[in-house]
Length: 364
Ligand SMILES: *Cc1c(COP(=O)(O)O)cnc(C)c1O
Image (tube, rainbow, N blue to C red; front, side, top):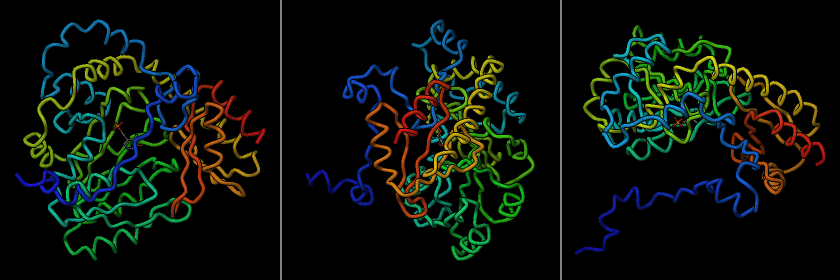
């Protein structure tokens, strides 16, 4: 028997260990606070939680001991109504994250390339590497807009090996939208263009999803995690070109979406007026947060179309600020890396949570 570690894929053995965020229930125990008292504004979750109908449907559902429908027929039909695209184009997943992984695994052969535009969501890079893909970064401009010509050059230099371009609209962490003209230009490239719309419900912009049937290389990813308050249940979906779906149907785990997520997702789509009211509240709160942050001399917030606001921190350390807020039970995300030097990202919360946060910030 060889050393077991020698059986592990070398690229995975070499991987840097992921530092998981501490679960907030453990955090609150450590801090001696009730979890409900923590002001959690670090992961863009929905502070209002699932819709009442989703909670009731979860409590009433009688068939948890039966395996899920691998085709997700009912959910796909409801999503088709919601998105305005036929169910044939829709594939639900265990969060949008699972679909990012699936796309990488179905499209990338070892050495193939994805084009990534940081600062952005971290999973594109992570999943591409797990699929033995190569990541070519085309950094965003200083105002977080895309370097479209840079992307075009990178695709050309990859000489046919570039398979996926990941775009995010609104982008995480800045909240900016992808201009339609940029998307148009990038769709002319010979690769799959994935538009991750995890936050589109908070934007004053149309989804690109309805364009999928008429656009051979466009894929759109959406999720219930943010607008519908189901982050913990893991439910996302892709609106995908048919040839890609054909491959994914063969490839995917039959029971990738669990029954609880399906039940909650269906009930959420049946409770849109409640959920849309909450979206409107969070958008209003985002604007109030932006205005208040702009009044603080050492913070420079960026306009956002998502449920969070990114701010550049000037003259003090974002990491230290994060720590000071943490000690008061307020969780925010901070960044200090190339392209994202000394920033904090704050999710839109309930009005009382924003008040609490602002009170602390103004005293610092
Ligand atoms: C939160 C987030 C996701 C994750 O979606 P899940 O459905 O929870 O996996 C995907 N993309 C972006 C840009 C996000 O910020």
